[in-house]
Length: 141
Image 1 (cartoon, one colour):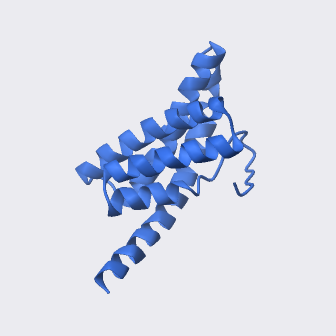
Image 2 (cartoon, rainbow, N blue to C red; image 1 turned 45 degrees about the horizontal axis):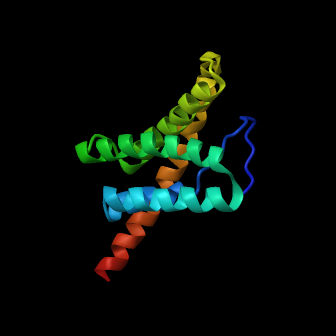
Image 3 (cartoon, rainbow, N blue to C red; image 1 turned 90 degrees about the vertical axis):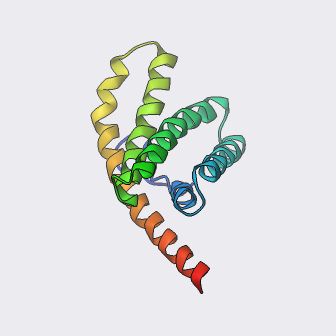
């Protein structure tokens, strides 16, 4: 809920996704899905509405699916997985928006969303990676 404006309407930093990426790497896919669902429903009920919940669920479903798939293959670091998740989250929301407004012209917004998803995904991946590293260190202590 921290205000963040970067000139792209609807863009959010997605700080809550640090928890999702950390849980994915520390506890596994099922726990990451659960954390994501609880977060979306709680925030949606407190600060949004059913439409915002639908958009968030669509973005999270695509994002988590891609992140789980990439993590299982060990193709990318946590930053790369998070970046792909950020981009896919925006694509999932864009698909729902296109269906809702019944036009594909909304996809002209895609380049901006890919850039913002890449940047925020890298930032969240760096921060989530640091959380993961520190949490793993706590387990060993």
